[in-house]
Length: 147
Image (cartoon, rainbow, N blue to C red):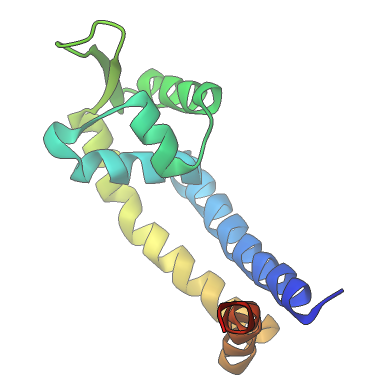
């Protein structure tokens, strides 16, 4: 295994550790998944608090069927509603509701706290120098290939 490959896998492990920790906390404290939380955040900052389903899928890194299920869960909880695109009746938007805005507001501090806790715990597994070495190893081949 190359140094770059090993570094990449360690970095993925770190990211997975942090993501899983945050996801468990969001589920436990707010009964929402991490993707649902992120969807609410994207909707909050979007123009008119709405996004086309395919836009939301792209922002979340999900395929169309996964984002459809996610939006279904958000709708079932009253956090979003669907709306047809006025210009293209085939286009469907998901729109943040006041209830969704409230859930996001309630969850935001716990998300930040969970992130901090996860990063603190990750320090036992990865120190700052280790993470720097990982990112340097990952970019080392770019410099060689570019030169």
